Image (cartoon, rainbow, N blue to C red; front, side):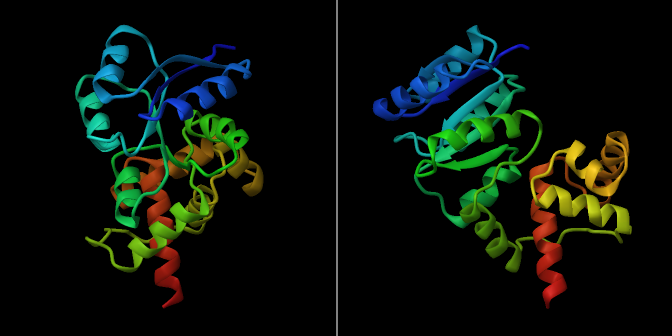
Length: 214
């Protein structure tokens, strides 16, 4: 199995060193490089193939969001997992809206990080309880209405699985349907809601839950 090639971007040397040692012990993960600034990281992306960027939200003089914008415009098509010592509710929502695969708090257990990496690389969304709370709060005061058409019962079941962070295979097993049927259901949800990522679907699920409680 090919290793997941990782670029770590964080302005704290001790944190970078700690993560390097953690990831070196994983047989399917490879720390290709670690950088302190967005400029250094951009150079690595130009020179080496990277599958996942572990990106600090606060890089001192810049925010991780800025690096994501630059990386995407330069053609990077890998995934992002944001690590943070603290983000506001609005910042957490914005991170998911621009395609970040997950938000990992620095106070979390280091061992959980490998689970988060695999989840994001599988196309799933990694969220801790604080991040979910941020989405719940944001859904109470949405900045714009979400054009949601009527969902079928099956689509609601798939959406529930997405909200819980289940993989397509796990959703299929729960519903006793094939993985391809789950994928078809996801495509229908994307079409009906006008979103493009599972992260954005998580937000839709939260909005639907809030609406159902009113």
